[in-house]
Image (cartoon, rainbow, N blue to C red; front, top):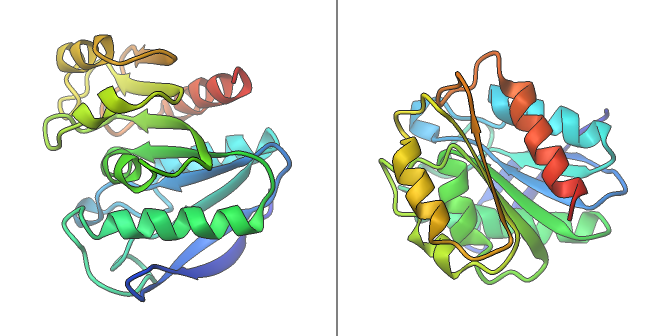
Length: 204
């Protein structure tokens, strides 16, 4: 499935690099994990998601946060990366037709939620391995949009007990999948994550 190299600007004047695939089933913004721990748009989970989504007809935009790869700027401690999400949403909204969705993995889930909190173009939220041990995700309690949360049962950064308690406090519609045997990094289980995401989006 062909991706083309693209660049787009943030409101604070940075140019970020990305890869865009055009499909016909709506567009998914893919947000990679923590830049300081090796996260890029070529992360194994992001890569698997992109391939499965494109193969199912979705448009996708994956991109590098500021300071990663060819994206300009420096790491912004999670706060400035929110501007990167907003820039990505504005860009893909101009490039593809149909509804938009956000899929963030780990750090990407945290900043992604903040970036599209008031963006009514984004119709559903997907949080993969939300790092509850590092960040506060109580903002999800204010979300009325459909929500998918996926985590591995052995994820020490997203403890299952804490995640289940958070999930109970969220409003419908919501879906939770705890993947047996998987940890935070999903090596060897990437296709299972992609299957959960495809099923969720196709059921909307």
